[in-house]
Amino acid sequence: MRRFVALAFMGLFGLVTPSAAQHQHPVAPIQAAEAAPARAPAAKPPAAHAMPSDAHAPTAFTLRSGVADGRMVYLGVGGDIDGKVNPTLAVHEGEKVQINLINGEGAEHDIVVDQYGARSGRVLGKGASTILAFNADKVGEFYYFCSLPGHRAAGMEGRIRVQPGPRTPSAATAADVVRDPSDLPGPIAARPARVVRVDLETVEIRGQLADKTTYDFWTFNAKVPGPMVRVRVGDTVEVHVKNPQDSVMTHSVDFHGAIGPGGGAEFTQAEPGQEKIVTFKALVPGLYVYHCATPSVPHHITNGMYGMILVEPEGGLPQVDREFYVMQGELYTTQPFGTQGDLEMDYQKLISERPEYFLFNGAVGALTRSHPLRANIGETVRIFFGVGGPNATSSFHVIGEIFDHVYQGASFGAPPLTGVQTVSVPPGGATVVDFKILRGGRYILVDHALSRVERGLVGFLIVDGPEHDDIMHQGPAR
Picture 1 (cartoon, one colour):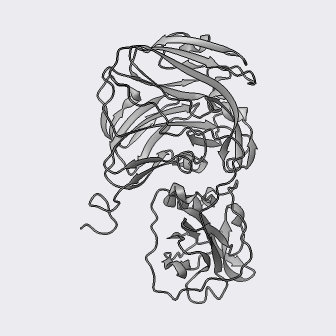
Picture 2: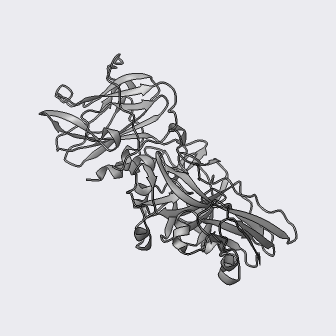
Picture 3: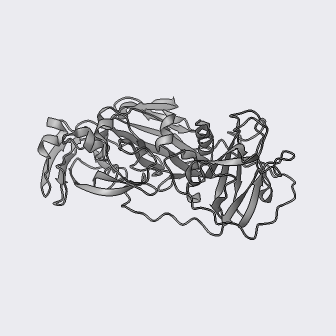
């Protein structure tokens, strides 16, 4: 019933390549056709959710072969094409298009788009699947169809509408709460210890959770995660927690990198309109989570009130070319994943640890559509990764990369591990990984509890540079 999910994963993880061009007679563009419905995310299969082309992700559709009114047809799966017979597929010029085909009734089928010289493999047997992919670089309306003898005439034919120009992003209905992963302070130059002031404003804000989906986040400085704080061992950290007058809740902060009552939470319980200050010494190098510690603590954390503080060791960390700041969290909404509109927190789901959403940096698509990580071939990348939680442990993994160094538990007091594939990070924990990029392409950030991809947890690292070399190439050994 949910086989299309595997197909979506294949496209997302870069396991799909466009079919080789076939020598077919091109089908002339259709001059007139019924208007195709606008597509939008839905509560049904995630495979139907489209990603803008600027995120280097395909606009994906899922079709299932079947029978309707005595004819062989393609049936839409998910989104606004769900259940429609031979649905018109609307895309924009320049987008990567992926069509997932599932065999729904057992007969042999394929799918072809002559105008793009694109042909899928054949599927034989109920539940078998294949993928068609191409770049929509021609504007117009074209046919997709089954090339098996007699199948097109029997009804297996639909249309692809390629509209001119890039896709217009959906109008935002709420604030952008995503923390850009490149938004973090740079390395600390050699200097003596000093007092470092940190200003945290506890902002309650309606934010964009997904396309046409909003949520009332609680944040530090209006972003999720809160700002990354960077100090060196021996610094004195003076934290000002300001809770605006128009807030509803009391808020506070607990720094895992601080030694003292509640990590500072006892001293920073700020009611609306108050500002509280706590000062602590950064005594132990490491990367530490901070979060709100006002009851109900998990409620404040799940709503977005977490971040990290980096305490650099004397002499700092080894130099790298790029650094990124990524945190994972969960949301527990009354409505199911994918529901549009304003969503509400479900306390029973929270305390029974049944999240609807798993997120990097606060929102669905935060590190794919909004702010993918970007680097160049030959550069060394470091990721400061933490789990706000409040409940789920992450198995952090970058598909297609091996971590050269892992500071396990974000500890700088021991030599880093080398050659690591996946790192386990508990809620309220952190890690630091680095690796050198040897090949261009798109790498996928995931929690290797991969079902969570279905609930929003995925990111991209897009690397500019050559993609075909001796490290990896399609075909036999050279």
